[in-house]
Length: 190
Image 1: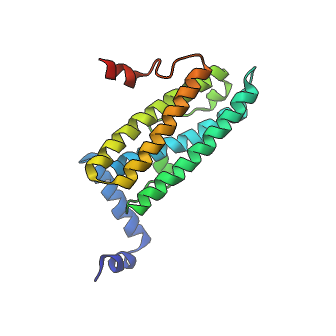
Image 2: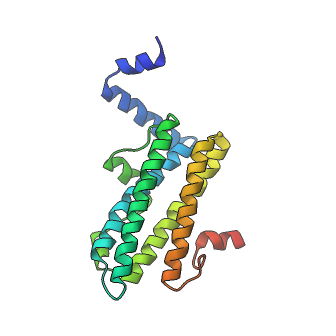
Image 3: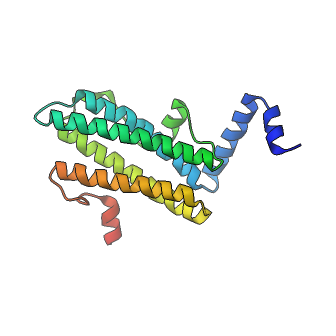
């Protein structure tokens, strides 16, 4: 019996249980690029919520600029969310796909109180979220290289390039240099 046929004979519950056991094993033994990518998808899910919240609630002198920018960022985030998940599926992985999984894997947080944040604080918060996501992306890129998964590596590199550009632009918006206050950059300098 082929693996595909055996897979089809198992119930959806059995297939999901096997997938979850495999993910737990990988997360607790030898982490791989796909496992890190689940964290990236979790971060993107959180960013989906935060960027929409900021888009809706930003106010002040920069309302029009930031209202549009947050919309641009959440649309871009959604494109990467889909690209990364589809890349993983194409490579035979089973990426996170439920709100519960995204919440479990996300390294970011969101809170209703943030709708009352000052516009500059919203921007700084997104910069920090992008930086955390970039750190995970760099780790996933290195693992994809080690695993010889060129397609996933290319996807992650392109995603990192977008994160870098967005960090630079948001930093410029609040009057800072691209790498100012960047802990990852500071560590590289030591």
